[in-house]
Image 1 (tube, helix red, strand yellow):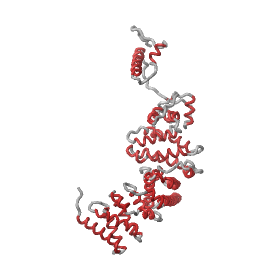
Image 2 (cartoon, helix red, strand yellow; image 1 turned 180 degrees about the vertical axis):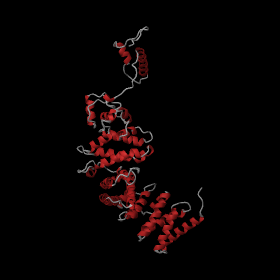
Image 3 (cartoon, one colour; image 1 turned 30 degrees about the horizontal axis):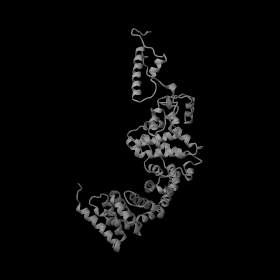
Image 4 (cartoon, helix red, strand yellow; image 1 turned 90 degrees about the vertical axis):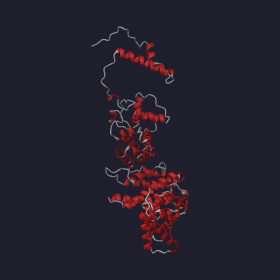
Length: 476
């Protein structure tokens, strides 16, 4: 139960009333107005006993000071209180939308200032949750997409310069970038009919991904802004011809793929199973998209195949047993704690196998491939025994060796080892044959299999000999 603080409630009420009256009569000096907003910001950090801030009147007062004030200082102070209110109390978001100030928020995005970008973007971002905001109208009439793309271009230019000069970006700049990326993801998710308006953002996002360093060891690799940059690509049209030059630049066509694969490798060790679905799944999807849309003559596909599919060295053991990136991906194909991540990894490896079931099995072994093929109603390829044709397909899938491979485990046949067990006696073989005969007959009667009983067939062909009761096995 929240405690009642009459003094705080009285102070907040007085501040909101003072700021509301100021809108009518300009009763406060600029200094008094900014001081009142600063005090209100402090009170508003804890919503208890600060109810007047979150009322219809309180939100209207803050909105008008934020977007109608000629003073940039006053505007930003009011925006900070408004953003905090919209964060803490979801009902305030619709109250803001009802005032019709989204257009002025879009206009604020055009200012060349990190604080303005951060605050205005945050207001629009909160407006995308649980409100009647018309995003299509903001894109068409208020040029929301154009403003966001322009801001991303500004970030890309500045941060690439920081990378060249080995200097660090301003923290406020990175905060503004993070908010723009979050808004980009939300708008493209909620207004897919206007995706084309955001395609121009792709080159700037790629520039930022390539310019920003991967965080040092001990820091989550997809920490902002890298994670939000990856997420921002999720809904964009990466198959568009106009973005190919930035995704696969002529001078370094695999540069983006290399960065993404490196992030994936680090992420698989940095995040727990519980974090994989929400945090790393988008990265897997983007790697898959980069592979799928790469030009046929580009080295990108070969790089991704070699990075994600098991190598010859790994095939000297049962696949999925090591600590390499391919081994960890295979293990995660059946991760019960991260089902969405598991599904994305399975689709990625199928795509990297050129969506060919035969190559898929050759690449990772039927043991790993079978679940995906069954769930997606993809026929199991015939001839899993590993003949010449199969070995040739293995080579096409990224494996250069012609050595025969166990189709179930993916291991080279000539490196398989078996438990040192004594050979079965003739009596044991007879009992096993009888057991198999019974099992097959039961399965046939139940309709599980529709093939001739192999034990009965062996008897008919004279390959089965029943031992006499007085049979004694020769011993060495």
